[in-house]
Every structure is written in C-alpha cells, then in structure tokens.
Length: 104
Image (cartoon, rainbow, N blue to C red):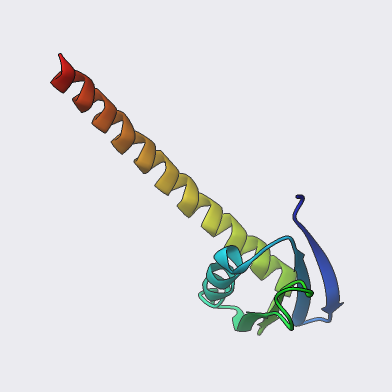
C-alpha cells in the first residue's frame, strides 16, 4: 500500500493534511515532534472514524510556512531513526559475533 499526503486546507500560518495509509504508529510521534519546533504554535492529529476515515494532521506556526515545519520535523525524525538503526545493527553484529565465538 502506498502512503501519501493530501492537503485539505492551507493558509499563511496553518495547514491541514490528510495522511493516506498511515496510522497512530507514525502520526502521534510526528505531531509530538512537530510541537518541539520553536516556530510551531499548535500541532495535532485526529481521525473522525478509524475504520472509514484517514487521519489528518494540523499544524499552525507563528512564523514561516507550516509545511516547512512538517518537512523539518520529518528530516529530524529521519536522522533519529537512521541513528537508531545504525546502533541496532552494531549491537546485533556484536551479539552474532559473540554467539559464534561461544559456539567454537
């Protein structure tokens, strides 16, 4: 299933985006991380009916473009998850190496 965004509404300081094929696993952390941006005044996600509606995320900024705040946040989260992935890979390689030594 392909995930995509659909802009529901946008003005100079806010944006509402429908998130197609996304769920709470990503949206809750995204909305919370967007709030950490010093230019963001308000950010939340909501869904009218979980079985028939797609979730939406709303972002309002004090300065700048609201879509820029979303982009900055996704970039920060991407770096975080890449770092977590790299650290996990290192630990798994250590564990595998250790297990191989114990087998010998």
